[in-house]
Image 1 (cartoon, rainbow, N blue to C red):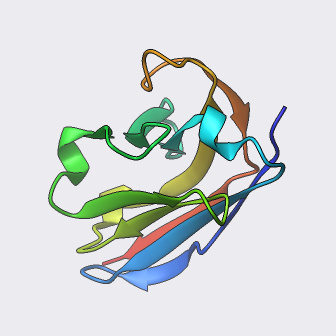
Image 2 (cartoon, rainbow, N blue to C red):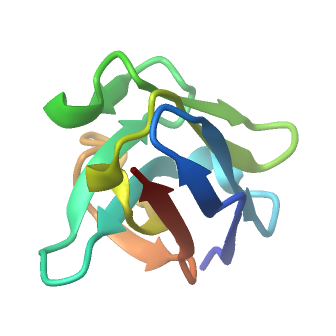
Length: 122
């Protein structure tokens, strides 16, 4: 079991930037692929980005490609999501999650943080 705590959300104007951080507990951080998900009011949860255990494999949903960057620092047990050129449609609660699936870092997300609110004003 791993515990995840997100931070870095807030209110930003359209075109602005934020960096989300997710701190994981324990010393088994490298056992997990990590992902960022978001859920906007009235919409289903969607995957935003994911990164493999060693940080080599990276995924971005089409709507954020070229704007968001995922990274991880295994020495600090932390995963980041840098969000640039934010749009009002990016407004959502953003969740950090950990996957125990060693073969596919897009599935198996069993552990979740509490979420952090990102609000983008026009």
